[in-house]
Image 1 (cartoon, rainbow, N blue to C red):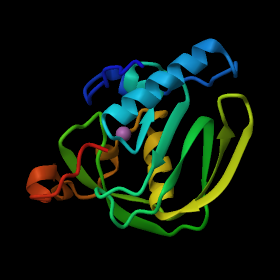
Image 2 (cartoon, rainbow, N blue to C red):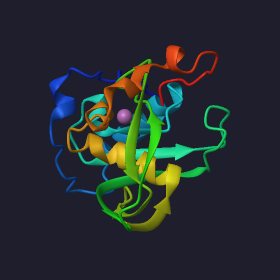
Image 3 (tube, rainbow, N blue to C red):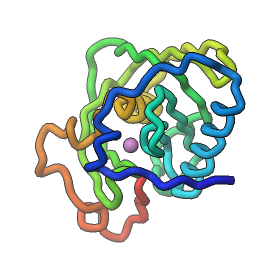
Length: 177
Ligand code: NI
């Protein structure tokens, strides 16, 4: 078990485009994914991208069990997604509140595509191809943005909808996602 420190906004590595993974099923990849899973679990996150622990590779993990913090959110199966490609299905977008382990204590209102297709690989090189909507689609778009150096505050349309979680949502235990 290795919980790694999460880089915070301001670190230049979070603004870089991450590199494609070229070798699957390697011990190095397995170790990295274990560290990512341990880190995400320790911080009670919904997802984590490799650059957030200082590794500039195109890897994200995500997954949400039913959780009091997201009472309206559907469950998202735990997924390892390598070299992802996202395509919107239709043009419908929806605003939703997001947080990020790299922007602790904050929340912002971010527009995301409501329906997307995402493709990529698991850690063994098996293909993943899913059509998803709503919260699942939001989590994937947020995590994959990290691979292109985009943090969610860059997508907030009106910065009045950006602030401290405990001020925006007093009394709610929102964590940092
Ligand atoms: Ni994030």
